[in-house]
Image (cartoon, rainbow, N blue to C red; front, side):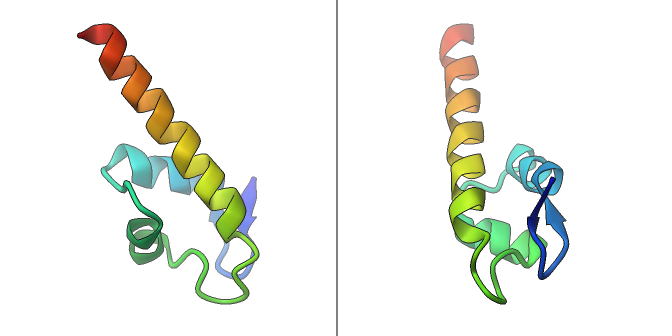
Length: 64
């Protein structure tokens, strides 16, 4: 699904960036150019970021 129509950034690209170490919106912006035009995608991207980071944290917690 496209999250940022202005720059053609998908949820898959956002998740990939998070898996590669992006933990902030600034990092996502630097890696994908997300949110540098109209900004309408930022809320959705932030939700994806938070959901993915929570899932990573839960996985690490369960493994410990």
